[in-house]
Image (tube, rainbow, N blue to C red):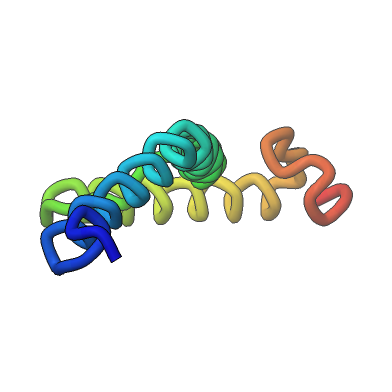
Length: 93
């Protein structure tokens, strides 16, 4: 065989070219798939709503708001008021 077709350097050069061509050919598809997955994940995050609180003060505020809402709903049920926020969840309150 001619010397230009034999040896590690020739093999390395040829394999590098093949790999580069393969990457250049498939990279746009990979980038598009990553962008698509990123958009999909962002939509899922938006559907989940606001993130959970991280600081002790924020957690306390969330718990306090939940307790206040529960107490108000309980008062409304005792007094016979219809809670419009809960409409459709469990029927008439």
